[in-house]
Length: 342
Image: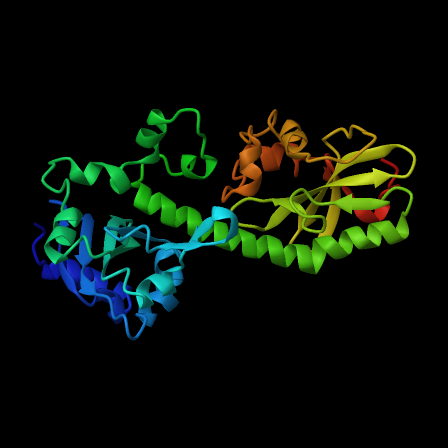
């Protein structure tokens, strides 16, 4: 069984809400004290609906929970024609299907910061306190425990499933997955917020102005994942970005257009390096974007386009985007001087 460890609680306490640590009973630290696991157990407050977990588990645990030892038949809601659906979390709590719960904490120290993932598990009548705690303690006697599962790096995990490529985690190949998962989530949120703001404030109005000024050349501009949400490609510092869209020309058809935006100067340029190819219809053009990039960058897979990855190759930006000859950009053309004919 896992033993009560005040040192683990001292790490968790300032990083978790007080209610999440109620029922803490034990855990384990790695010998070098850079890895930890910790667990709680407590009965479900059926009358109160255990609103703490129902209302807050999305923030704390990503909205995910699991259950063990519950009556699966009681968890079903039957409909007409013999179909059924699973009851929601609130119903399972209030109807007493879940009798106890446990929060599990998995953490790793990286560059002076603890990265901790939380997992919420409910137990049914078939699992009492002793069985629940025994379940939590499975595998802890393994001397390599802190090298497996959530503590294993992506480079090791990917060797088991070589056909499944996760470009997000390739950025952190040697970190424990509990750390890389948190870094990917954080970066994804920041990048999404940046793209959303830049689209609203600059890119979307820019394409609207192009259509107004040059209606034959810009009949319609379509984003990759949503019509008016244009794909932006940028380095981590976000001082500039490339925006790409599929655009319809009245006579010639559809083609990709690329623009560069300097965030400090708030100025657009046309990126001249890719050669547009015209088509008679629009389509999901992720592979076309990668075709324009893969010969001059390490972005060789469409999965980069909807991920946390940033394009951080100095050679790409300095040689193929921002390169100058005789003081003038080689691959960038100010929009004000564009003829907008291709």
